[in-house]
Structure formats: structure tokens, C-alpha cells
Length: 156
Image (tube, rainbow, N blue to C red; front, side, top):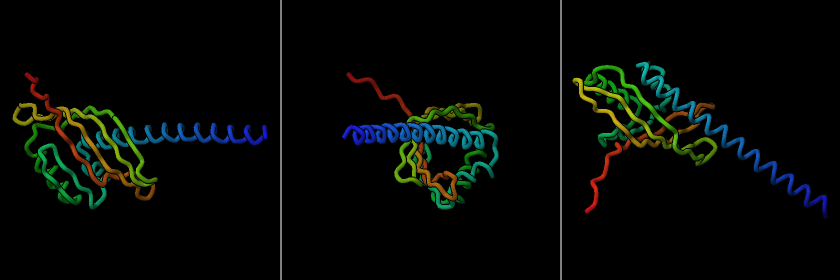
């Protein structure tokens, strides 16, 4: 009986540590993923940037418009970049992640964009969400959305 209890305790302890190591690995994986995506955006490397999206990817932009399909996303981004004074820069921090299945993940993060149009700041803080799908061992964006963070008016 003692050996059974010892074995059960050892098994549960091992599973706990394996789960924690896996969670830490996933945290690092998704932080690295965001870093790669944002680096591609900031460098203006369109080929690298769009390599992180599936062909059927969709996005709800900060202005509320839905673009579906990689070609629509590219057209929307190209149109936007024609209006900006230069390359945007971003700060970001992963706030949560969850594996929905081994090949589908839900990520949230906070981002602040430094984007100027005709000298005026149009970027700002956003709360972001993405659904990622693992394709041939690589995480790709299937859907993302950005919600501008706006201060709420004070109550009476």
C-alpha cells in the first residue's frame, strides 16, 4: 500500500512539473512569436510580415473594419501605409494565452503604436486578440483584432 501511495504521489508530482514546464515553454513561444511579427512590421519587411498569416486570415482593425483573406489584409495595410509619415513602431506585452487544442491558441496582448500621419499621432494603446493555428509546426495568425483603449468619462 505504501509503495502504491508513493508511486501515485510521484506520478502526480511529475505531471505537475511537466505541465508547468510546458506552460513556460508556451509562454516563451508566444512571446517570441509576437516579437517576430512586430519586428517584421517595424522593419517594413512585407514578405516576412505576411508569412505569419494564413491565406484565409481575417482581421478587425482598430477602426472596426473587417478584412478577410490575406490579399484583403495586404491591400488594407498598403492603403494605410500610404497615409503614414513613416514606418510605425510598437511596444507590446503578452497578457494571456490559452491552447484551445494542441494546434489552436488564443492570445491577448497590449500594444502601443507610434504612428503619425501628417505629423499627427494616430497610433495609441490597443488591446489585441489573435487566434493562432499551428501549420506544419509553425504558429500562424488565423484571426486578429485590435480594440483602441480609450479613457471612459468620469461618473457623477
